[in-house]
Length: 204
Ligand code: ATP
Image (tube, rainbow, N blue to C red):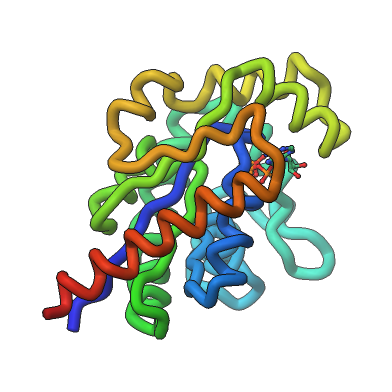
């Protein structure tokens, strides 16, 4: 039986984790693309070995982990290196996501990815759910949560897909602004109900 998969995305600080946690509390299996991206470069992995071969041993910490800060600054200053890394990582991440989807047990599952649309991961899912807030809310909530500055958050927003474009690609939208957490939970409950019935009709 093929799986019914919801791709959940949204800009930085929009509330993806908050919404995903509510789905998880309802018993829905969650595959997190960020966690997969870390998993595939763990010590001993093929990807880490390739990265070391390409960039050199000083991109690996003394404990054998990937030096993310160093790699981030390298690919920030070199498009060639950025493309090389993406070409290495994307197929491995995609493959691991597919494996995790196969193992999911709930009647539908969620694939959460900040760059679901930018990285074409939406090709793997049946529906796209966008968590949406305006830019000033993104900045306010992110600086309240993280030590980052408003400028840093704005830079990340600029590197992600523009809000209007993301909303155009959505099948479902959770507007997470001016709503308290209980109201947000009600919105998720309604969608969960909808997804359960869609997954049931798909499997019939
Ligand atoms: P990132 O892309 O940076 O990982 P995210 O999309 O996963 O962010 P969250 O971490 O879920 O976003 O939410 C950002 C912050 O906003 C968190 O501190 C969260 O608790 C808060 N938040 C989320 N939804 C609401 C809400 N409806 N009302 C108030 N605060 C909220």
